[in-house]
Image 1 (cartoon, rainbow, N blue to C red):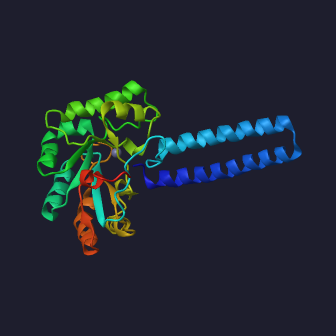
Image 2: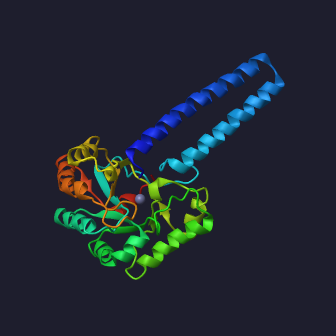
Length: 276
Ligand SMILES: [Zn+2]
């Protein structure tokens, strides 16, 4: 997940885009009113190009923009349950500390691991599987998929599979795209390789390391049924990236949700029998 400031910048660009779209529509409406064929055709082409570009950007950059490629972003909202997901690890010693907390609290989780990091700490991934957590594919090197060729995307998925093969993988086969960014080729490749795409309901920019108090607030501010929480035991596969803030607040966050009556469930359990 990119830093919060990137989201703010993207939001400002989106606002500028909305204004541009409104301006183009206004020009088209004006041309239609004056019944000038060339002006209508020119403005119609501009509006069409703008709409196509906007659609392409939404598809590529918004993790749960679910057409034409659906991703699983939320569990059944009729049930008071939450799923924890941790991306970008394993990242020692932090991933083991998170596993200790999950074991103490009897909480299942999903870990979307980076293949290069798996090769550095295979014993930690073996522990995840042994303790009933799900291990998903988050690519071999955590490169953004948008600009990659199809064969490079296939290699990112296959590289992760080679890294995990000696340890054993989880079923079902789940994939989460780095940053949630999607390539136009991703749907076809996931269908060929048997992966289901997973997004998230709530990201809290925990890799920005905002401090324990802010992080606790972000994680508990708006509890919702069926939430998939995006957290990070690593940071884009960087060895030893500090996750101390998250480890400090995680037990309190788990206790907080339980006090509100939420149940922590594994992602595969949440996905069974639900579509979105
Ligand atoms: Zn990631």
